[in-house]
Length: 398
Image (cartoon, rainbow, N blue to C red; front, side, top):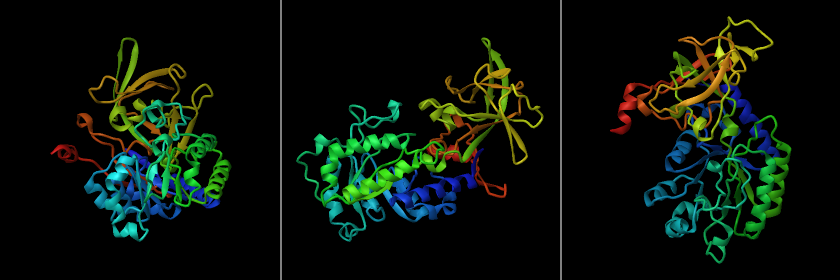
């Protein structure tokens, strides 16, 4: 079960609201990171809308959030453009060829003529600040964004915004570095009267305790003053980080080649793909109220009557297990974790921080049952938002 904490979600969005109001910018939810739309009514007032990575996310934003919609995709087709023009507020393009292809169609549309839809370009400042190449849009040969040399002498008629997204789980010092590169390569455009907005994308870890929010506020304020533009931020992870868990049950325990293994009813490849892609190692807890406290063991915490014991690294606690999923993929492994006692069939393990970039990426590979999605309210009540059935798996491919 994916269990989302409503109080934790609202704590994040209230903090984001404080930051955006202090900075004088607009801040939207990136649906690519969190799109559990049944939670939107609980924090809609804190944010300015949503950003989408294509038509379907944009429709979801329009139909369920009901505020500003920003749409960016590496490529569109004619039907997508025609539909997006009916409701999106910002329509950003990845290349000049895409913009030129659709420019006449867009500029003749009544909503564009009335100023209800603004168009922009995603730029590539060629400034890498992250550590994981898979998530770096500034690598050589990147398919994301237009470099400064590609804009030299280009006809930019009809455009009013620039958009960059170069960060991933980073602090505001990396944003400061990126903004310097943006100013060097694109500052002359932003200082012109043509451009009215700058979208700084996502990847800002604003709700992390160590994040320097004061510096972010200063950077946004300085950017607004320098270019006289509206500034937009698109966090996804910062909205849903530390708000949800994935509860799993041990299905089998056995040994192989000197390793003890535990097979769970949830899968890394199907339900936690960033564990393999990032790669990312989540915190794991064993739920057991009978284990006595011991200073030599990992810390335990009691929440809503359940006691959670934090698993350690391999060998850190007495009993180490390799946690694997129920699929046929040999590499469907979350990692090696150690526990204060031996694991048993029926034990409950809780994987922390599983609200962002999990539910949006899950699959039904191998026909493994998809975890239910539930919401925990402030009074502790658990509301099941969605349970998946065999028919959901069967009907996906027909």
